[in-house]
Length: 87
Image (cartoon, rainbow, N blue to C red; front, side):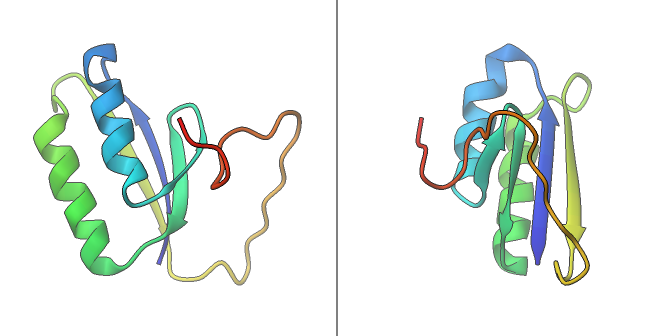
């Protein structure tokens, strides 16, 4: 499946959330990651994030797609992130 993940977390947990997400997805932009992921890894990612975030304060949104067949992607302005750029 293809996943787009968006997060808004307290600054105290940002680095840990980003590091965890980058194990499974590609960083695209501040607080946005995307990529192909297996169902098993998707569940691992969700489990790891549940342990990191504070449910009362933080937010993580997953957009999941079975296929990208009918989708397109357009970038306006500066291209950030991607597979070739590592923090």
